[in-house]
Image 1: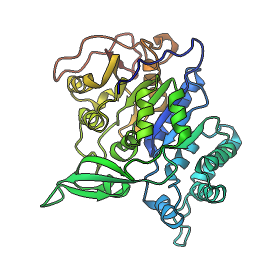
Image 2 (image 1 turned 45 degrees about the horizontal axis):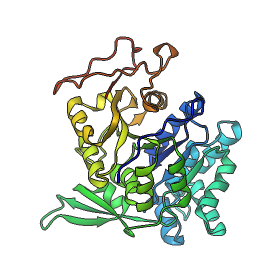
Image 3 (image 1 turned 180 degrees about the vertical axis):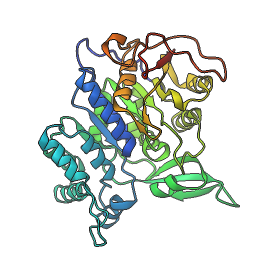
Image 4 (image 1 turned 135 degrees about the vertical axis):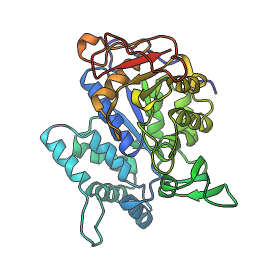
Length: 370
């Protein structure tokens, strides 16, 4: 399947954006996209499409006891999109609150219980999410990638003799001491959430990552209808790489290894931009070589200082980077206070560090290669 050329949004209209992921990575993306919406670049009605394979903690308990979608990642996305007025902040704080103690409620987040109760009474996870969205003043929408809970299975090496081994469950995959080679879903071909598929088809910009690579990012491309929607959408597709490998599932992974794994699980995927933190890419030329086969014509690799600390993206800096690649050839004017102009140019020599554009403001260095 060949992806169409990315569409150019109607002049003057904010971008319709869909972010795909889960957990803290999706929260980071949504925070950055809200910043872009505040600048008028993105439509304030953002859409989050969320993984539904969590089997640990509060989400895992509710899933096993009630047979419902695990609500944790959905709750986090909802909190990220809550209104910023006093009422929205109050409700967002409440849904994120987790009970302590040692009783039956210990470890449960209030929002998980609220979503579980609404899913149980309404019988429709999308209606339940829309109801909580109304409560929190969410202007956009949070959608599950599937309307049924899924399991992640993985082929893992390094767990002892007789390998490779198969392990099952998001927690098991995320925390394995072995090396994950590939993942798949159970059931193997789940039905995608129709509303999520429609949102992807209607988008101007699709953002995949950052997040737990095997358990939050890749699963979206393993749901046939959702994968086909991503591949055939006329939206611009942007991949945001993690700041560092995660203990367990991606321990020891280089930035280029993340891209190789993404390509192995979705060989037809072509993207318009890859965004990475400049400090997280020790050998830029290796990343450029890994990116080349999966870049669309005119695609680019954009390195920028997007980390607030080694484990967390800076929402404003990530918004700057996403804004720089949101449209064909677009970049922010350095005088506007943003990330500075994107810098086209040839790849750096192996082992070298790209020279920043001298016009870029200190602390917001960025470089783009096409």
